[in-house]
Length: 113
Length: 115
Figure 1 (cartoon, chains in turn yellow, cyan):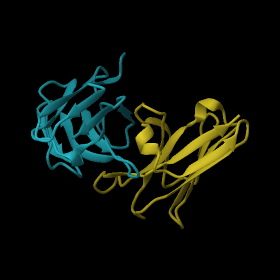
Figure 2: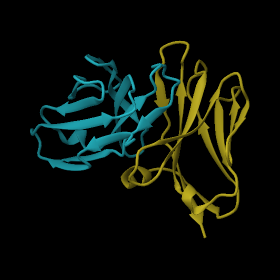
Figure 3: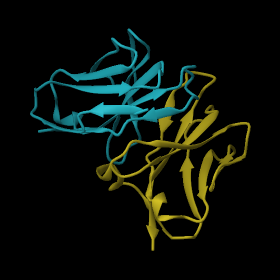
């Protein structure tokens, strides 16, 4: 919701440009990662996932890149549209250990007209 | 399908009051979860359930109780509300295989303020 977004870093992108949202994860044992989109006043929505045996995965207009060396995850959104305005956060999971999910704090994506 | 629904959407309580948040899902999911979301923090798991009649503690269970009497419903109770429980609460459910790597479907949230 809005109150959550007020404390988050914001990325402002011109409509039509590509967006890159970054996430640093905490545990080298995490083997599964998810990106969520949360629009104002709504619950999180699954966008795309990636397993640790992959470096890149593409969906419709979205690409997730995983760099295990530096524990970094990024979400690329191509040709950003007004409907992409939301808070985006990553989640890391240790599916081969305790299945614990750790959610990131998120980044607010603001689309400029 | 309505997906995951939550009742109520908003609520204001006074310190010490009690209330129950209701989560319902019509997707026949085995797993259900309750999270809280606070400014500047990621979602934190309160309690979860792996099936009807079962519940388990998550990361921040203190001050909350849950029940899963029916597969489609997961209730979150606050027996004596405290201002620290002011938050947005999200319910989620996941696909029948029950693995955490399965997609979690979230409800729209309940915004709770404790005065």
